[in-house]
Image (cartoon, rainbow, N blue to C red; front, side, top):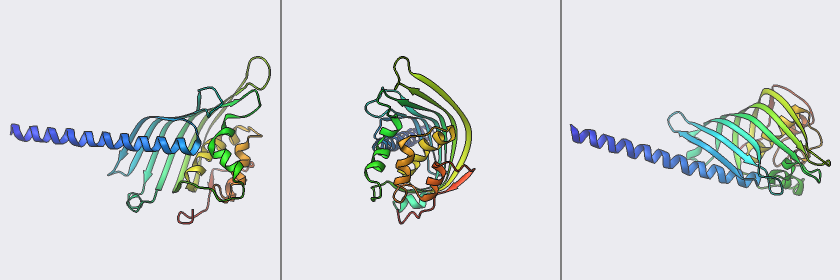
Length: 241
């Protein structure tokens, strides 16, 4: 009996350790991909992958300012809940059934030259440089995205003296369907709260619309230009991405 208990204990520890190692590896991969897509440092506090319930939970996702801006948090996402298609993963395709993202705060900064930190992200620069041209993307199929948007804090250093600080309390929840690239997802997370807050003149809007064929379908352009609704469809097929 004692040997059985010892064996079970060893097996339990081994399974638990394997799960922890697996989660740490995937967490590192997601961090690298997010950093490559945005061009800014990304940190994740916690990551948990459920195989049997086909779910992923990410906590404490933070993206920091791009190069040329003070080291500060640009996007703070306390919770990300994902339901994925295991069969698609086994076929080496990324099919996410649903993603729920809680946006606590977006920290916008305008420097002395009048440039916004979001406009210096890699996803925006690529849209600016490759307008009308095909661009390399990380393909996926996301059926349903739900964004819970908290607030935006804008610090404007473009004028002399102390920075002008504006706080936009958004506090709305919106859903979107049929998202087909990681770049598209990143643009939505940033642009939609800014649109909801009524912030104008950001290059991220123009970059998103200019790269509409490769990154964001036409429906996104309508959204970014001001059409508001509870749900938007971004129609593109996974295989053609």
